[in-house]
Length: 117
Image (cartoon, rainbow, N blue to C red; front, side, top):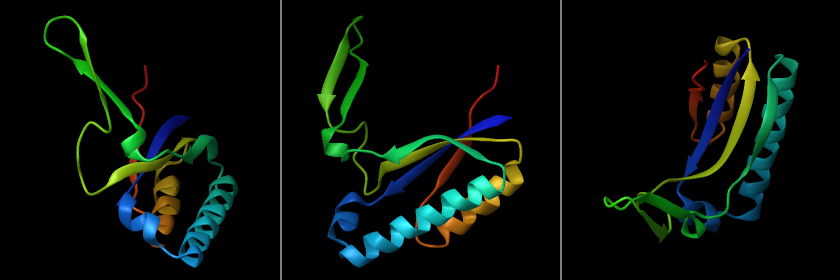
């Protein structure tokens, strides 16, 4: 079994402005996505939405052995990671097909396999 991190980037400001019915459609798409994962033998280890990127804390080396800590995300971009899934699967092809189905409903997806020892 391999583990996959599915990142969900989105333009936060646009997403926040969507009407309630669009959010309900998204919630339904994720409910069906979770059903398809289970039916396909894939296991969701943990998943969830993230707080807004403006609430992030970024940490990086300061070049002199210390740490520079700043409020906000590492990069300023139109899209930020708004949620994630950690999925365990023995069928990468099947997992990619199910993820593609969710992407077809409007979600942006970045799927990455975790490096195995």
